[in-house]
Image 1 (cartoon, rainbow, N blue to C red):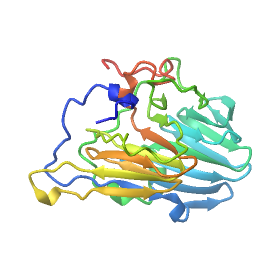
Image 2: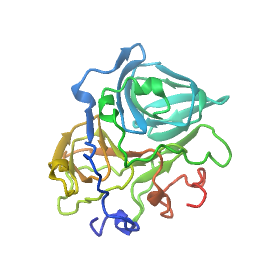
Image 3: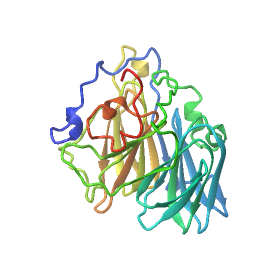
Length: 303
């Protein structure tokens, strides 16, 4: 269902058609950070939380000299530094690293800290194993009943040479046939999509579905419309109306399986979207050259 110019048109077709449940389909979850007060507002900055079934997203407007600590962190997490002018000092596993902005950073389990040298925005991604962070999410009610289409979270293998701080710059040359700028760790895959400077061409959209995982679309800049529809079941009580949800930035849209979806950039100016998957996607991982740090993080055995 991709336009022929879309690199995803080369992905292997799904082995099944959209799944049909005996009950209701799970709805999407939209958390528009710009519409609500932050869940935290203190000396370190203002932080907004949102979650999916397997993950937590924290968007922070950090204050000058802010410090964010984790003690006994159960698994690897991700730091996104969207702004080139911003930087952070990350400490973990006996290592201390100055991380320039415009980057994705994977932070190892255990004790760690992030220090910002100036007021800037940062995004952190954690799995729901961090129960203290899950408790702060305003959309927890959406996950009171887990989506049965999504299997329990199984982390991918640890890095070949062990966990450590790994910074990956986003200043990556665009290559024809490659989709976005994809990095994966043991818990997350982050696809930092190429920015759009104008509204998306509505004759070249990409409606598609996922059988068994959510897509989290993090809007960092610009405006978007998320278009969703659901397959019909024999029971009309399960049908859902199409949705065309407007989300400015910053915001999170959590798109559940098996909804058919596509997203349209709206702004004449910078539209920056980041797609987040927890755990990493197998189909993207199997595409040669798509995962830019594939040499650091192996795929599961038998993949």
